[in-house]
Amino acid sequence: NYTTSAALCDECGNIVANIKIPLPVKPGERGLRQSDAVFAHIKNLPEITQMLKSSIGNEELSAVAVSSKPRDVADSYMPCFLSGVASAGMLALGADVPLYYTSHQQGHIMAAYATSGAESDCVLQNFGSFLAFHVSGGTTECVKVSPGGDEFSIELLGGTADLNAGQAIDRVGVALGLKFPCGPPMEELAKAYQGKIKGIKTSVNDYLCNLSGLENNALRMIEAGTDKEEICAYVFEFIAKTLKKLALNAREKHGDLPIVWAGGVMSNSIIKSRLSELGRVYFTEPQFSADNAAGVALICRKKYFSEHES
Image (cartoon, rainbow, N blue to C red; front, side, top):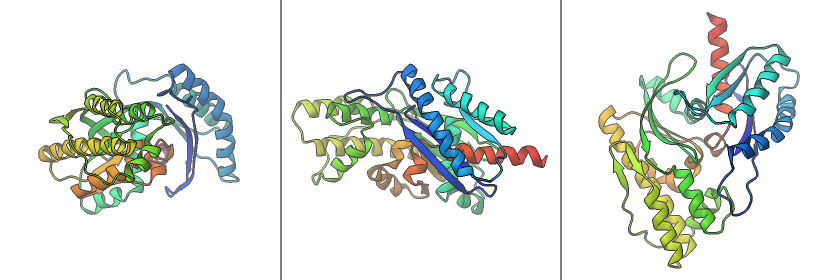
């Protein structure tokens, strides 16, 4: 919802370009209405397309893919995806190449899976599936993923029952007077905190968690005059402990599978450090963790070769 993005990969699966333009959010606001997001994407798309054209250069464009919905489930829909669908359709038509559709979640998981080393480990160790967490402002889910074909088979195990992790971060950050999106400045504040973090009581039941308590506790800390550094450290520690419990519960039922972490929240170094203690976990670079089109480009490549090899 908050980044207009396009990416290009070559026939070998190398990411040639990963282009992003963030959507503007006014100071003090915690996000955008869908109508405003659609308008902002439409304004960004001509510039994005021109940058993509420069990246292609004299190479031949073989296919185009677009994320047309949030997830691969019935009724998964957000209006802002229509902006990308329209732009991708015109690009494919103008270049006379195939147009493929995928989902935002497929793209996130593919980007993390293909660029973090998880893909080679799963192949070498002969894992038929892996666990993945998609953690962002719009999604906090734990899924079981089976590779195969040109897209993943994704089974939803659980996730949040109320707030998404990114939502909780941004709500607290805006309350602290920080500019949306609040993750990066909050991370810097949290790193400056030297004390012990007390009073964290997470709410995790099997595959479901609640994060509204995190927001409520942080707001009470703000009202009590607690230092910003301590509040930010509390927020990230709470999220890390919650995700760790969900991961342990998932492994208890599905075995010691690799875990791929995707989504913008997984760019946070503090959370990554805590989750690394689980072992056989895979994080990618921030450019492929936060919203990006690289995974969609890689899925496009798979779909194209699948169609033309048959």
